[in-house]
Length: 383
Image (cartoon, rainbow, N blue to C red; front, side, top):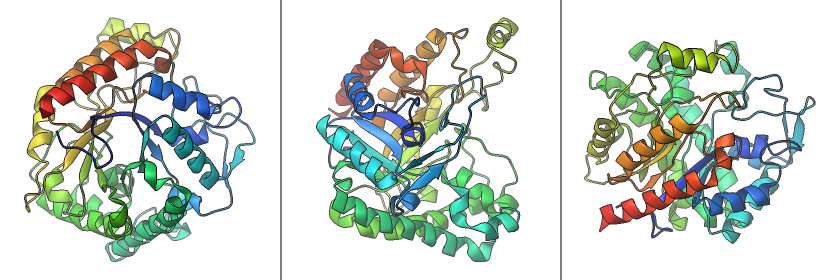
C-alpha cells in the first residue's frame, strides 16, 4: 500500500466537492459545519475532498446565486436562498481546516471549473480554447492556485492537505473547451467513463502537455510542504501516458451504470417523471476495471503513482427521494468497495453521495462499517 506523507493509514474519503461551501447558507445541508465535520469523523472518514475555490480565496467575498430551488431531488451545489448568498471563501476554508484539525481529518484540495474565471473571450469564442491559447490558460490557472496556496500556508490550511489537484476531471472540465481535443476525439465524454482506449495516443500526449502546464508551478510551490500533486481523471484513462513525474497521485472516478429492468423503471418513476433516467455510463466488471487501473499507475520513469477513488461506483446520479430506496445502491457500492479494497489503492470512498447533502448520510452505521472494512482490508493488502 502506497502511503501519503501525512498518513500512516489508508485514506477513507468523503467527497464534499463544492457543496460544502455553496450549501453552507441557512437551510443548507452544510450550514452547521462543526456538526457535519464531527459526523464525518464519527462515520470513519479521515479525508474530505473539497473544492478549495482558489480563484475566490484571494477575494474579500463571493456571491453564490440561487440554484436548484425548484428541483425535485437535491443535487450538488444547490443554493436554496432565492437571493443567493455572500460568503468570505478564505474565512470558510480556514474554519473548515480548523475543524478538521480538531477531528484529525485531512483535506484533499481540488477545484471544479468555474467558467466565468476564464473571462469573456472564451464565451465570445463559442467556449473554445484555441491551440495557441492552451498553455497560457493552463499556466494562468496554475498561477491562480499559487496565489491562493501562499495564503493557505499562512492560514494553516496546507497543514491539513492530503493532496492538491489543479482541476477536477481535466479531460471533461478543460478538455471539453479545447478545440484540439474536439478535433482529436469528437466523442462525447462523461464522468466515470469505463473503457480504456489505446487508439488515441495523440490525445494522451496532448493531455500530458496540459497536465504539465497545470501542475508545474503548483508542484514547485508546495514542494517544501511535502504535499502530493494529484491528477483528477475522467475515469478510465491511460494515466501513465497523461501525467509526468510532477504528479504523485491519480484520482480515479469509477461510476458504471446499474442495469434497470422495466419494473425498476416503473418504481423509480413513482418518485417523479424522469427519476429512472440517472445513468450515464457503460456497464463494466469492477474487478477488470480495478486491475486495469493498477496496470496504468507506473510512469515511464518507473515512478509509481498512488491511486485513490473519490467519485465511486454506480450510478453517478441517484434520485434521493422518499419513494426511492437506497438499499440496493448500498449493496452495490459495498460490494464494489470490497473489490477495490483488495487492490493496492491508497484511499477509497464508499459513494458518490457520501456527504450530508444526501439522505444516505443518515445511515451512519453503513458508512462506519464500510470505512472499517476498507481500512482493515487495505492494511492487510499492504502487509
